[in-house]
Length: 99
Image (cartoon, rainbow, N blue to C red; front, side):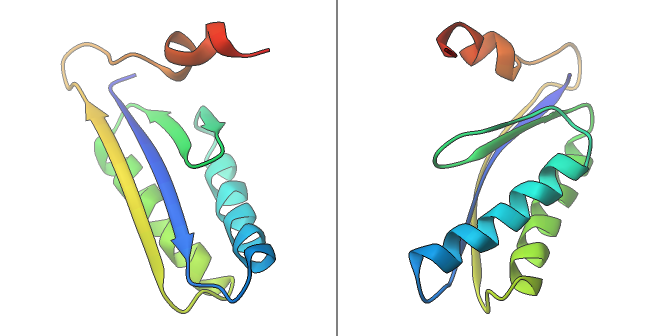
């Protein structure tokens, strides 16, 4: 794996319940990509081989949130990319902390 992204989508929604509903749709989209991902309380991490693919996923996350009812969408993204070799993966970073 050459890249990973931590994606936080913040939809403009009238209530916490609506925010969660929209974010759940975004998470379902991320899972549908087939890439290894980890859902945390504030962001979802995704691993991949291609930085462009991860950027496309970020863009699509924003579109999914918009189609789900968010008029305005903010995205906060952290990226790690190493074209030669590999980066630390989700399991290497947090696997020992899972219960």
